[in-house]
Amino acid sequence: MTPPDTLRALLSEERLLVMPCCFDALSAKMIQQAGFDLTFMSGFAASAARIGAPDLGLMSYGEVLDSARNIREAVTIPLIADGDTGYGNAMNVRRTVQGFARAGCAAVMIEDQLAPKRCGHTPGKAVVTRDEAFDRIRAAVDARAESDILILARTDARHDHGLAEAIDRAATFHELGADILFVEAPRSETEMSQICDELPGAKMANMLEGGATPDLTQAELKEIGFSIAAYPLTLMSAAMRAMDAALSALAADHPRDELLMPFGDLRRRIGFDDYYETSSAYESSSRPGPSDRD
Image (tube, rainbow, N blue to C red; front, side):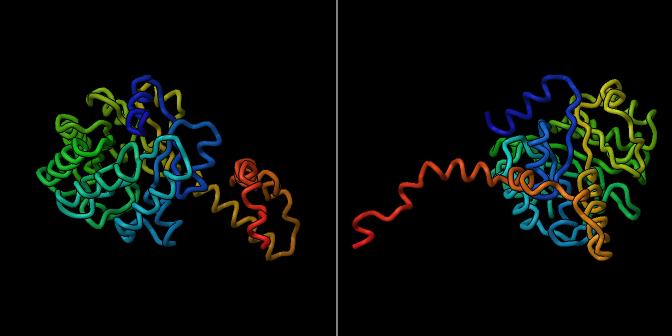
């Protein structure tokens, strides 16, 4: 099946899809190796990893698309890409959606923030008018008709306009044809339940450790009615903490063995063993023949 078809099949199972978010090809590969069914390229994490800068609209569409392509080439599980605001007007949204579809992404997220966008759990974010928000999703859905990909529609209206406005926007997103709904940053379990009770279709919860939304268990999220639980910074935060510990040990000339993955496991996870196994079938062609020696 195509990546969009695979994601549709997963959503039809009516279970909670636990989705660790990646920031590059290696982190995505490790997510697949750990047995997870899908991943999401976190804009926050990808911006930090690729340009060493915060997720404040600094990374361009071309850079985000290139990162998505690299991830797609490394894994076979469905990838949801962060399309931010669509990088412009409705026509830019169409191009953004089509670009991620051609890159092999299963879905793309389009949101209603005012550009330049911000992380959903940081201050200073604002949303566009209802009409502009609806135009973005309408354009994304139109682009989907030309290039198969699912649309994950996000609203950040809860921050400035309250939960009722956010739910109303998301409901219209569904009416316009969005496949998955994402109301960012509800502030209580009651609000999370209201989102699932009042909105149709598949809903995504964003489990940002330390963020505005309660960090519920997977069983609680499933009971409330979410279809996807995204963990946007779990891997990046863990990786940064591990690197910080290793650098501190190195600076102090302390032993590092307990901080490191064994070298054999490192090679295997990256793909050296698979490479050598596959390349062994072509060893004869790499040896010089009679004409090569003459």
